[in-house]
Image (cartoon, rainbow, N blue to C red; front, side):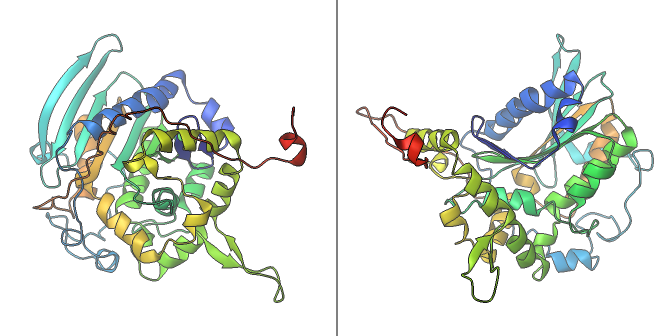
Length: 374
């Protein structure tokens, strides 16, 4: 579904699982997580955030074949520990730089910001007396056009990965996990992958699946990737041999619904009119007329550019042990290195308008609705 009011696109999720989550998770997921994500994504100001990954990232084929990792992990394809207890946490704090620690006494929390030394990934770890454990992997994803590539990629990375080569692990987690929250969200300038569970082992599994999906998805495979793009983005379809070609696709169909909603169109027009000169002038969800112009080459380059640890802001919350959090995370970050010359991904401040502007946006309506006085 797409929330026009918040400007965030979320994967479809049953409302029962949304409303059954504990009150603390509601606050963390939608208030704290969103504000924390915003603060972390903007913390560096004009400093470079985006890095070209072609030289630092190994290919999907190499990773699947068990190419050696940058640090001593045996092979990337080697079995991972199956639980927090099975992790080797010795020396893990040496692989992270402590940036700062703050107490939040009114909530009984301790928030600590770390930076992964090898990749420059930033990790906000919140120690809380709460059995409901939360994790989110967040990336700054700036659209350059209206093809909806951030939105389509959000769907696509959850269509199987290096260690979990299923068609849709997300659906399997919905059916079998003890999660209290499971979703993915695309905003105008970021993509977030949050999960939560009160069960420690289930939480370990959820974090493992999501990290593998974000960093090693099947969409990087030259054979599976185009198929996933056609499924989640757009493809040609025909009902019968004599009929016309039609466009279909999960995101294409979803955005057709969004573009038929007056509220969504109003929000989009207001945002684009307010920020005509920066990334907010583009539709991260995708304009159906532009989605069909997206190619696999553009699709893959977007993942290569933005889905790298150096462009990530990672979030942990709950009562799970700090060292285990960091060691699990490090096992997925280890194959990557921080680029020597990262490219800037700063969002420019919109200049003030010299004069008032008036914007008119048309929306679809029935004949009765369009009639005078209706």
